[in-house]
Image (cartoon, rainbow over all chains, first blue to last red; front, top):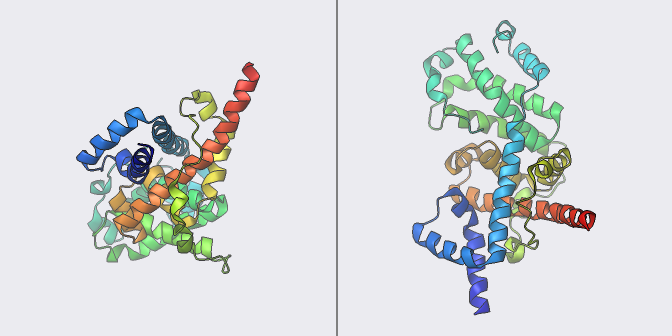
Length: 86
Length: 204
């Protein structure tokens, strides 16, 4: 019983990215979802992986191009006459 | 933050003909994402700025040869990634080939930290300290993994676009993406495990 369980945990791990990205084969999805619902460790790995991606994504979305960097870029490209247009 | 598909908004004919209006619009739309990309790869504002400038200088020079096999965005990312990687590799000629680091032992995909931190309060997950940790641990990834993670999960390119931008197969992108995600999860779990135990000490 235990080794079998382990094998599915490994399978989930290998397919985790595809599962998260929604590109996993539907039949495999069913197997993994069934496993997930009963395996606490896999649930944790799945949830924390999702959150990891989410944290990086959220953090980056707040980053904007600093005004002085933008200004120097336009100057370097001889596009300074476009600088006023935000 | 998904960058909308904006290519159709640009007139390729005008860009290829050297139209300044159109080029200025292109710079406006993509300077933010390209700066962010360079910053994530290089982790140095000055280097990132240089990559940003070089990317658009090269793009301007080579637009006439752009064949449209990939999207304009992917093409720009590809130039930027190449510029950034050149910069990463320049000052460290003796660093081991990063491709080798990707081939690690079988046990690597085994998660060690099984700590459920995903429900921590938002103010903790988005704190300035967490922000610093995010920046610190992503640097611990070999650049081959980091670049894939940045393009796919931070810049929101598809697997196919990431493969095009890096000149890799989609299979290679997927393998690296999985490794990158799991490693970052591992690093963050180690950090949040400490936070959780500190929190529980405080409430006792």
